[in-house]
Image (cartoon, rainbow, N blue to C red; front, top):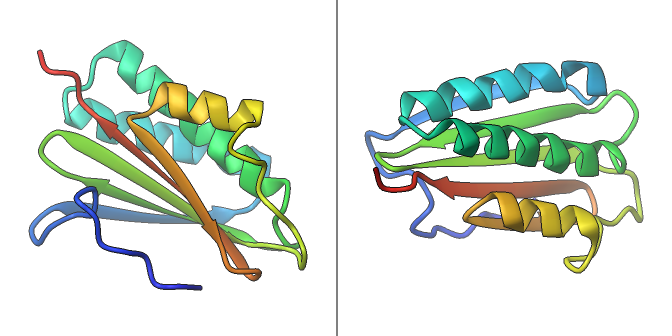
Length: 137
């Protein structure tokens, strides 16, 4: 897979990073939703922000599951900073598979529920990266 570019949303030294790997099966998405909610709560996100992020992670995973290879695993990386949570989900994909276009309903959901959403695919793996910043209290 191509190297991810460093951006301001990337964690800096000392930030918390949690890695979870689960089978690429819808039955395991609850684990990722629960981890998302727990980490967002740790950042003192509002309840509606936590729920929005849980829905966004679920939608991103559903997009990836649709193009995942048989027996693939979802690799989920959570980067916790002082005021934001970045969730990056990667899966191996079937040859020729593509993510939905940025004008699709699925992408509209992701961009409405997060601060930013982006994706990349290299023909072997696809990654969706979601960044959500906490609303100031």
